[in-house]
Image (tube, rainbow, N blue to C red; front, side):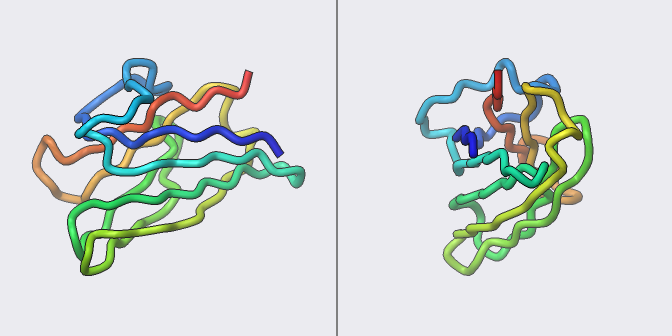
Length: 116
């Protein structure tokens, strides 16, 4: 399988492909996303993050559809695996994560995932 790893950055907005999100370690990074193209036609997404404790985040394939919810434990840690059909997206895409009903300034954007 082919694999890409990108950071989740505390950033309010970006374009659908995450082209303006830097894939570098910084104080704004809250987690890592590993996308793996599987042989069965699906893409596995593993999210590892440290955020606000006991909080539920909505995790989405940016500009496409929600993928699921991620709940942090009492230390703010979460490790979750999600999946989606690989043909839902092109070779370049990104993810977005937010807390439902949270005020602006609480979103996370992933750096661009590129399978080209």
